[in-house]
Length: 219
Image 1: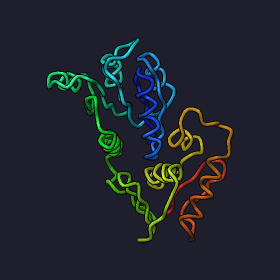
Image 2: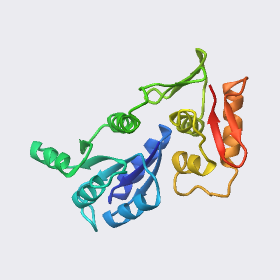
Image 3: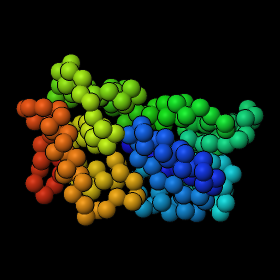
């Protein structure tokens, strides 16, 4: 899962980013509305944590612009306003969820996971394929009932592959979904991560390499 954090309080934005990384959620950070709209045009995000009161294009307008698009990330509006009419106003702008500051980090993570699942409506809360079961909320993976301990990055890569439901996922897409914007597109980190992931999941291999195209989880 990849998230864009739009927050002008740098310390809070970095704290959120670091916390999400511990939950195997890749996140990019921007500090104003103009940069947010540009980032969404350049990258594909599953969700946006959008502070309402930000410099440049106001958070309300960013939400309105994104909500008008056919294809867009889920929007979680983050704001200090706790009054009911403020929340209603956020939903009327097109926000998918609303969280008032201060907030508990586990709640933010749970809401983002729920929004991510909502965007893949054909998929159940737990992702299952080829004897694999992945629970995004508990960050647990099992193969044929056996628990498999994965690193955060391995978990993120496997989640992207399982969400593809058997489709082939390119290395570029894996970099985009499981790493942040600082990932080197010429690195072999995807190949290395896939290799380690295969070894941990055990034989027979369930992740297939499609030469020149990408990777897929076979049945």
